[in-house]
Length: 122
Image (cartoon, rainbow, N blue to C red; front, side):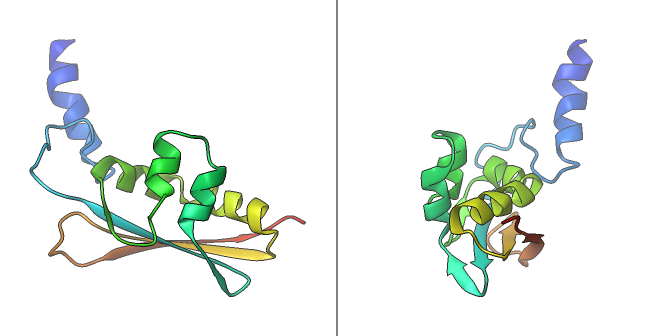
């Protein structure tokens, strides 16, 4: 059991790119930035943060229109990008919302982007 907890779980956490279960303290500074556009008009992620559940979710969204340093939030935001876009749909009552997450593991690396477009229910 100790081998699983100490070795395997940290190694598996590298598969999603976060390393959130591995010892990465001060070893790197992952960054992310979130762009939201509803019906061709920009939506500030801080506006979405105000409607999100208080705590880590709202903290990760607030100010995310600029690059933020947080490795775990970066990986979590990528996994839940569609959820954030759906929340923006509900708040803005838009027809279409697109969310684009730009991230980089280290500040000198190339930016990698993920994008999700949602047709909003009206």
